[in-house]
Image 1: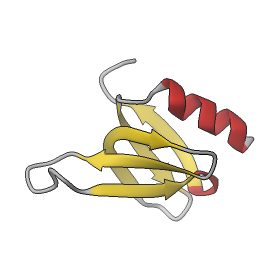
Image 2: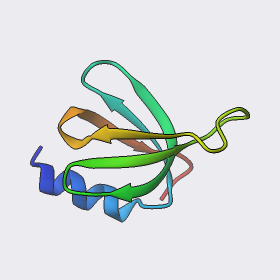
Image 3: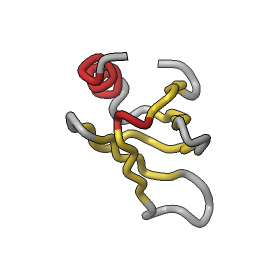
Length: 70
């Protein structure tokens, strides 16, 4: 998938809870806080991850699933 399409999709789901699977097999669950043409930033969810954020490069994303509907 073209990176511009991935970026547009992620912008559309900004502030939504998502699960992102990467080509390396990692699964990241959180809320989209920032999207650029290179990466997406997720605020992690969970009891001990209140302030944790993870940055996922767009070229490593295999799939994006919106949690709880869009």
